Amino acid sequence: MKAVSYRAYGGPEVLEYGELPDPKVGPDSVLVEVRAASVNPVDWKAQAGHLNSLLDVVFPVVPGWDVAGVVVRGGLDTPEFEEGDEVVGYVRKDTLSGGTFAQYVAAPVRTLAHKPASLTFEQAAGLPLAGLTAYQALAKALRVREGETLLVHAASGGVGSLAVQIGRHLGARVIGTASPRNHDFVRSLGGEPVAYGDGLTDRVRGLAPDGVDAAFDLVGGEAVTVSADVVKNPRRIASIVDPAVTPLGGRYLWVRPDATDLAALSALVDAGGLTVPVAATFPLERTGDAQRLSAEGHVRGKVIVTVA
Image (cartoon, rainbow, N blue to C red; front, top):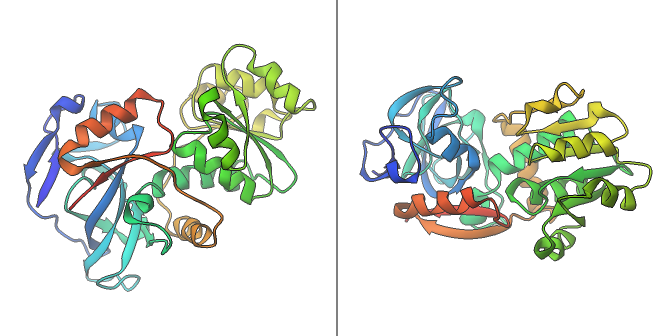
């Protein structure tokens, strides 16, 4: 199969495009023909070696955890899916090895759900990791409820844009930090934009004089400090990037594959309650360029890699 892989840690320059053996399919996995995959910051951070203390690595590594594609065949015990099913998945495994930037990926059924019918493969590929991150943070960790006010940092990014919409679906008023050029985009998602940077605490207080009920941090640093300044209860701060939230009483989160949560997101999409903004698409052989764009940190929505 054609795939992108790396044989040593490093940046986009270590990626190689070429032939690799087709993946073996375990008893509780299915073979998925990849139509599109999504670039996430964790991909190039893992590639740089930052997850070396957490995950064993088996070189050559095919990067990528997000996938949208079609089931080619099932394993020995996979009644959940049939040949030809269109699926999406957050295919994170116990080792850093066989990822989704390839023509095929062996995906455990616990990582998959049926693809939303209303999305293209490119759009669907942007849903799993970012959507699960937002959903698990807001619905489960922070328990956002109807009538509350939620603060989302980096509201125009891949996770943030979905968090704004999920927060609105849960019935919350959503204030989202973003650069001024992205304020109309945040409004289009149902959020109330506010510029980040110096004076952010005062600007948030201007919109919510009594403070916010929950805060979701996707930036770290000052965003955690501001969250602590404006949230009513510090236990209702969650961050996916900065462990400094923990001493304040908040939660540092790591998203997990969950077929039930992913199915709920797919249903929300098909019900018209969630869209997946796509910032740019690249062919498989240009995965390095896709990583570079993602690493710039100013992308509105998701960066997608397509597989012919």
